Image 1 (cartoon, rainbow, N blue to C red):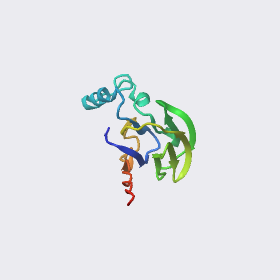
Image 2 (cartoon, rainbow, N blue to C red):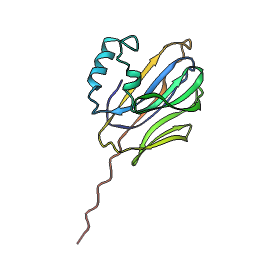
Image 3 (cartoon, helix red, strand yellow):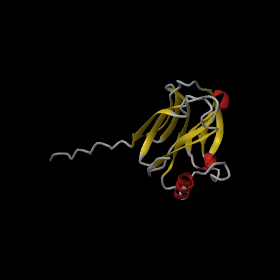
Image 4 (tube, rainbow, N blue to C red):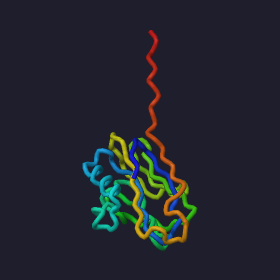
Length: 157
């Protein structure tokens, strides 16, 4: 898990034989510090990890065994099935103005109104890790910070 003021997350799920949940969550979430503690101590099962795979992601993807791809939204791991992915599929979740967008290889799969003003943290969890004989569970991760608006010019009198 990593934290920061991110507004976009791009990545690949190169292994199609495990379960990867990755996405963004409000940095103001009251449970964030407890999740960090569970991760630090090395929780090892869904129950031991406090069912984080559902509760710790507000906006994300669930890359599932058999290459099934789901939108992870509102703390629901399988909110909506959106087809499949390949090891080379580029998946992206990003804030675009007042909209959160989910894309696969540049194609929009889902969007929702987005009104949060605070920073977002990145959260990832892998179930059945290392099922692909050395293939990484998540790769090519890119985090894009919140863009800083250009200052408004002051009109000259």
